Length: 123
Image 1 (cartoon, rainbow, N blue to C red):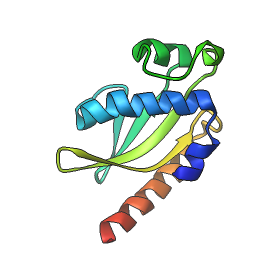
Image 2: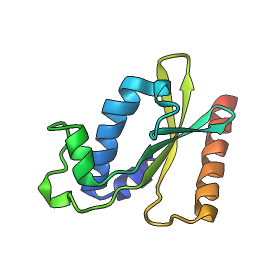
Image 3: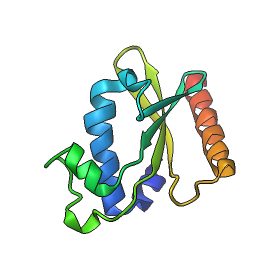
């Protein structure tokens, strides 16, 4: 996950950081049924950040480091997560769906996240 995060543009990283901090971190599993969180089965969820940088900046007014230079950059990120108990959210993997929106790539990324979740569960 760290390598993927390091490859994101500063605008995409700032948008993802704000979405995780101010949406996922606050509402957690409560986001289920919204545009932000999709169940994938077996306790795995897809956290979706799919707004323009300008929209992210408006949503989290003053709490991001996007700045006006990045407002044109499209953001279509996915982070695969699981919830433990009522308070802990584990982030397993992520990808930039905007770089390759194909169904084949999406399935590959979901399977990778499932493998990582199983490894975590096995200890």
